[in-house]
Image 1: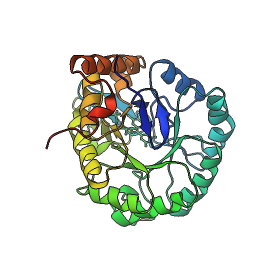
Image 2: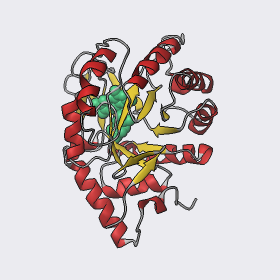
Image 3: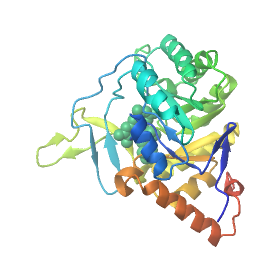
Length: 306
Ligand SMILES: Cc1cc2nc3c(=O)[nH]c(=O)nc-3n(C[C@H](O)[C@H](O)[C@H](O)COP(=O)(O)O)c2cc1C
């Protein structure tokens, strides 16, 4: 058996697989269940300062190749994280927990970061891929070098915890954006959030399938985009990355690590392989390591010859 342990920003993960934000990350019980099913760590669904309703149903649908969602970052707000999710999960914490936070405004990111820090997550992940109402064009913070760096600076001022920024693939300069975040104190990154948005049409009804009409695309179809983004961020910064996007098998996990990821995020995988998919992916990674003489998984991080 290969050594699959990973040190990420000073936090020890038993294996490289991590539950991505937004999937099964709403209650302590479901987070614990994901760890029981093999994940090396978990990420909460995006936490807002106050309750956030999200979009109308239907918000999700999937095909054999991809998944689309317009959940709209629904969340009960910080209070639930403070009174339920974190206290419950932290009792005999089964694996590292990453708190994913989101806000519309810079000042809100600061307030929320200060509060989240007190819940003692292992890592804080800043989701800057949500619509930015401060920007008249409604672009996410992740689409501008200045905005992405600005959010990083505000959050950095409020916490000494490892701080990672979740990047959007929907830009032409992800490496430059990552560099700007690094210069304001980001310790690492999660790449990527969903691609698009995309549009899927019910051809019998001649209508969009999702009530929100458009939605973020995830799952197997986006894997090559995720692998390229991870490599760009790795080249630009050399900082630790949670490679996320379309990873469904052990071979996918190995591939994104070769592009530069230290950890591997999986969300939509659960739709294809159920929650026990984490165990299956870890087993497949071990089998690949054994067949290829890899004794320590760290050997393959960023090893792709370009
Ligand atoms: C149903 C669903 C809900 C999601 N909610 C969030 C969220 O609340 N916050 C966030 O940062 N990313 C969210 N994501 C994005 C995932 O964390 C991940 O970055 C993306 O889906 C690509 O990975 P995957 O192909 O493994 O799902 C969501 C994805 C899905 C499918």
